Image (cartoon, rainbow, N blue to C red):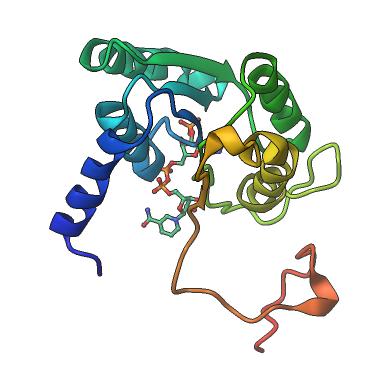
Length: 185
Ligand SMILES: NC(=O)c1ccc[n+]([C@@H]2O[C@H](COP(=O)([O-])OP(=O)(O)OC[C@H]3O[C@@H](n4cnc5c(N)ncnc54)[C@H](OP(=O)(O)O)[C@@H]3O)[C@@H](O)[C@H]2O)c1
């Protein structure tokens, strides 16, 4: 595992990056995403931060953003309300960002949840849990490529937090994971 000191040294480098970095955080109302958001906001010079929250998490996330505003008042912090278990909500997020920005330096995606009740289809016929961790993230990257590829973004980063180290085999006959039986048995 990477040492805490290495992580802290890496985070400190953010303060030497060009001013005005634009970051989008999807899944930062708690957990890994929230910590990444806090450290990015703490170190970046005049960052322009966009972060999304589902309706029930909006109030608590506004409180967090208010504390970030206090600790780094030169930054701008914009909350976009969206539920990314629907791919169309990503399109809404992308529209809001492209309305204001021409470049994107950091796309940090950690939204996800464990589904305990088996597969449920959204109105688009996709499983919400898989959509949150896969389809929505891929859509975000695809639609934000023009901003990420803008030379002004300099050295953009896309981070997708999943479950590194516990990958399993790819089931090519059931790519959309409709078969609930354990393929190993
Ligand atoms: N932490 C671990 O040990 C671990 C292990 C393996 C894999 N992972 C994966 O790593 C990722 C991050 O983990 P974490 O521990 O940071 O998770 P977490 O604390 O549960 O945070 C998940 C984030 O995703 C958001 N989210 C969930 N569904 C959403 C939706 N439909 N629309 C918008 N936002 C949604 C949550 O927002 P709300 O506030 O609205 O709920 C929250 O901000 C997840 O994909 C998780 O499956 C984590």
